[in-house]
Every structure is written in C-alpha cells, then in structure tokens.
Image (tube, rainbow, N blue to C red; front, top):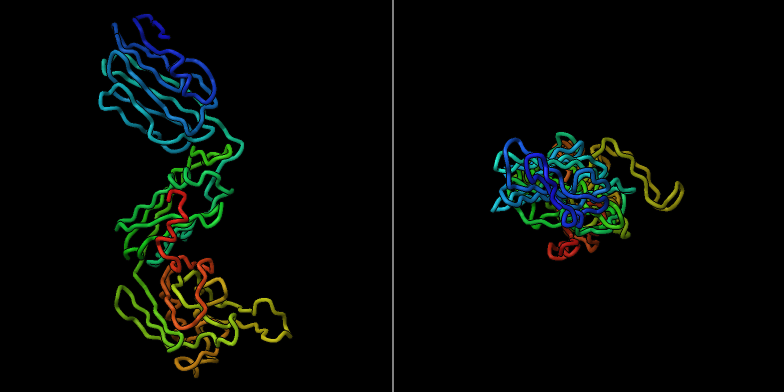
Length: 388
C-alpha cells in the first residue's frame, strides 16, 4: 500500500513490487517531496533494503498520478546500468543484467519537480560464476589476418549456451555476416561467412555480468576486446606443383618453391584445405610424434623461421638441406620446406589468421586440426550456434 509522508502521498506499495523480487520483502523505494503537495507516486522495484536480488532481474520504476523525469542507477562495481523510459514517461526499465554481489542505489525523479524516490538493494552473490578466461586473438598491438576467428574459453562448462551467446556481440567497422559455434561446453568460436575486410577494427563485447548461465551459475563480469584486422595476406599453393603464391590485398608479393610431405604415410602427407597461420618460432625443435630415438622414422630436427599452420606439426620453415628438391619434388615429413631466404621473408610478414590454402593431396585438413574452421561450410558452421 502507499505511504503518506508529511506533505502528502509519496511512495509505493507492496505486493506488486514484491512479486518481481528473487528474495526479500517490502514495497518500493520511498518518494521524498521537495516542497508543496504532490499527487505523484513513484514505485521502485526492487524495494529499498532488499537483499539477494537475482542478477538477471529487472529494475522497474513506475509513476502514478504523474510522469517520470529521469532515473539513475549507481552501483559499487560492474558495468553502468542504464534503461529506457516508456513513451508516456510513466515507467522505466533497466536495459541489462546486474553484477552479482553488488550494491545499487536507484534514484527516480518525477516531472512535477517535487517527488524523488530512492531504493538501495544488493544482488545475490552466487556460489559459482562464469568468466571468460581467454580471448584469442589477444596479443597487444597485434594485427591479424582476414581469416582470423574469435575464440573464447570459459572457466567452466556452460549450461545455458543460448543465454550466454545472446550476451556476445561482434561489431566490425566493415560489416560481414558471422556466427558462433560451440566447439566444446566451455569453448565457443566466432567465424565470418566470408573473410573479414582488411584494414579495420572489430569490437568484441561480452555483456556477461549477471547473465543466468544455468545451474545456479551467473556471469561474473563483462569482457571486451578490440581486434585489428591487417592486410589481406592470402597464400595459395599446389602441393603437386610444389609452388605457392603469396598475395597482399590482391597484389602478388612472391611465388615460392617448396617441398611438401613425401606422402609415404598419412602422417607424412601435407594436408590440403584452407589453413590459417597460427604462430611462429625461431628456432623450433621438431620431433617425430609417437616415436623414440632408434625407432624407424624417428627424427629430431631444429629448424629456423618456422610458421605453424596446423596442430599436426605442419609448418612453413627454412630447410637448406632440401633446396635442391624445392619446386620439383616432395621430400619432407609433412611441412613445407622452403629456402632460408624465403623462410625468413615469410616469417617476417606473417600475421596470425592469414590464409594458406593448399591443394593436391587426399588428406584433407580436419576442422579441429589447428584453426581449421574454414574447412566447414558456413551453413554447417552456424548450426553449431545455440541460437540457430
């Protein structure tokens, strides 16, 4: 019911406001008159003094007998809470979820210039929260290639994937269609339908604080990353013809002879398909997988200027010992052997997420072998979205 103040009816009542609370009791915030008499009543939900408010709840302010002028929300942590006034200015609703374990004060002013209502409350502090532990790409000052996906890892498996995915937003300066794909319960990856346009910034935002992730787990805090897309560096290569051509923004930079996997076994066969450059190292020690010294096929080789393009041990790297075969025969264990000068040049210009598209073998790159996301059609990729 309403409460009468010294100068008239000032604030709210009870049951309608209580129904929207996760816990606690009491009516809305109490209005305070600046001067004179007022017929305006302002109700704030959650009510003043309420504790354990669900972070995914909504702050509501209603005015009867008048209209609202403005509503402000101050919190002691987490992102700012803003909202929207209704067209008739008789109600206001917050526009996002609240931070768990936070304190908030809501202040609402009526247009009559006389009525101000306040409500201070605290949100639930859940036993378990959800956070993003890694965003890739994430290197300071890095420019990435046009094929680069956005890869997220969470601190725990996500139960309500749809709710979490709705909190994720990707905003490129040059728009392109894209979709999220849940590759594991604690991992989700964003890929575009076509390559990013080069030379732009892409803003990733996770409005995660307060999102109900299911199973009593709430998002702990928001996350944000600005990703810089560099030049469109795309390499195409024919394993059968032993050459690859590197282009930047459509202009050919260099054609490089190479020697690929000898094909004696599947392991020694270079994968065909759309790969992305993942990382580089100088030097890198390469050891035959699953073999020890003395076993047939065992090798341990230190190589320079190595650029990785899969998780099955494939690199573009310097191989001075095979220069005589580069451009004419495939003699490697699966990597692309190139001359020291070409390796140094390629190493110097590479960006993570650059495309290297290889053809000519019957071993297709698996989508989960490194960054093989482009091996999946976009229609199939988007089926991995919780919102599809």
